[in-house]
Image 1 (tube, rainbow, N blue to C red):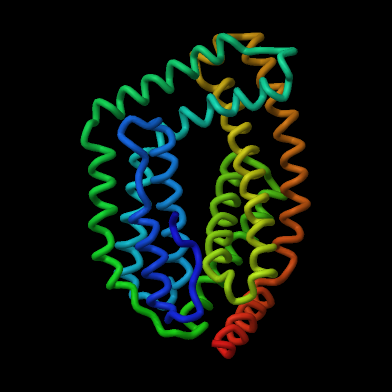
Image 2: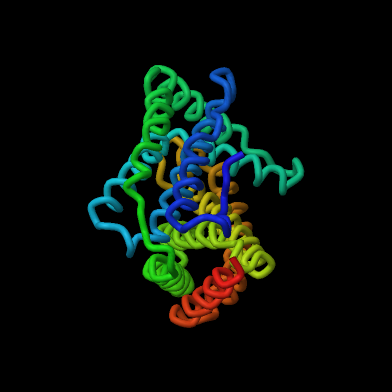
Length: 296
């Protein structure tokens, strides 16, 4: 199991390297396992490592940060099409489960299932893609020596400030205009903060775990709402799905109902998560850090 947190016995540099190395070395599913699970694992690993990089972004030379960030960003992007196809089908599953069989969408399901199968065939045909990404992950451990920062909160301050500020800004943008794009941006920034808070959890486990739990709930709700909005848009704009007429329209209505409820939950939770000013949040994290370090 991949390691998620720093340890009090380590320097910040050593701890971050070990967290990164643990994620990069996490065992992959067997070659016979479901492709969507492997794709999800790789993309999640990339997101967690990008969050870790952002945590110490202010303490790293720009060239090193950009090279590492691009490495994980680009590898995740190579698998985005298959991820999107699976998520749309899973979103339809969720809607039909909520409706408990009262309404089903067989034509939409057939179209989405065909896309999943097409993406899986395309991935299999690119026989070298997944092995290449795994190989790059194996080699990426050598890059970790580039990550070296001082063992003080100064190494974390700029990264935490930018992550919290960006999330707070994205939350406000969503409140003003809950578009699909604003859903995505807020969820992305909240995920970065969630992973960073998890890395720092040992500085006050009870408090930091509670915050990480709330951020997990927020990002899951935002993800579900975004997936609903994405399928809603696809059934309206995609020619094949839009041609399904009444069935596609009925699905859009159900998607909008669930998305609206999720949006309300996200607003309420976001108001609590981002209640502090950016300066107050960073100052609080610094106090936790300093108290933790004194105990070592």
